[in-house]
Length: 96
Image 1 (cartoon, rainbow, N blue to C red):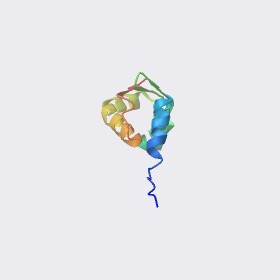
Image 2 (cartoon, one colour; image 1 turned 180 degrees about the horizontal axis):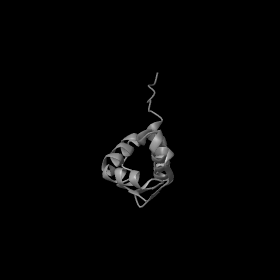
Image 3 (cartoon, one colour; image 1 turned 60 degrees about the vertical axis):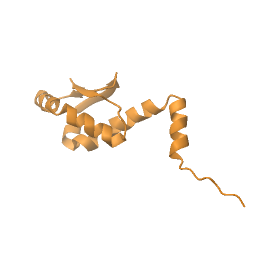
């Protein structure tokens, strides 16, 4: 009788995504999708556009006051968003 070597699907799937160049875009999409959960519904309602450029999350906001307030908490937001996807996807956030 032989023993089966069991592995979780995570390792081969992550390896496939990494080799095919899909890992980074997938993590970026997950991070953007986590934005409403991390910042809350009110701030999300004032957010117009989100995209990632050169490891920086670009966030367009309707409110100049909110833009200033969130700029002071950029490092904590970056940390929370990266933690949500369990990976270092962004290095900073730029509000415009």
